[in-house]
Image (tube, rainbow, N blue to C red):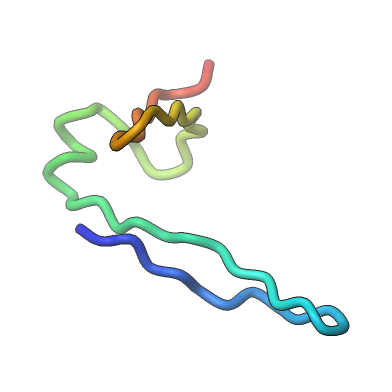
Length: 54
């Protein structure tokens, strides 16, 4: 996996980007996530944790 930066749009002299991480399907399945699930993220130094938002 790697972090990818994607251009979103430009307003005036500012450019805006979003960041995308493609997670392998086997990890999605192991975590029990399904397409359309809403997720929460928690970031700490060197790691990001995702969990299903209830």
